[in-house]
Image (cartoon, rainbow, N blue to C red; front, side):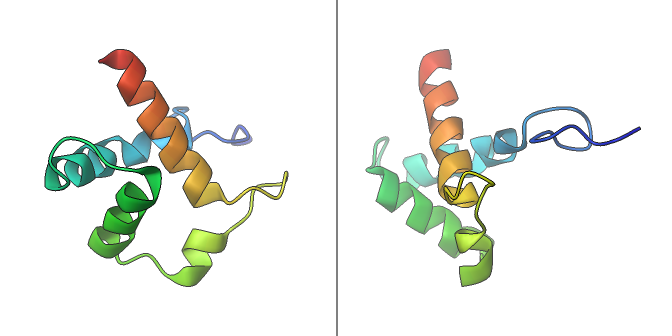
Length: 79
């Protein structure tokens, strides 16, 4: 069976792997932070390389930034 586009090995969207790192980054930042600050904390904590950060989606948008944005968005909607 082929892996669905944008889905992880269990069928969940790939951005869900950033839920915990986003929460941790926001806790470190005192409960809120600008997107750049949150991404910087995640990069530092996870030791992400420049290549991992710059990996583009087919649309040309940076995959890392997009997935962190989606994680933040869905976490904020969940409350």
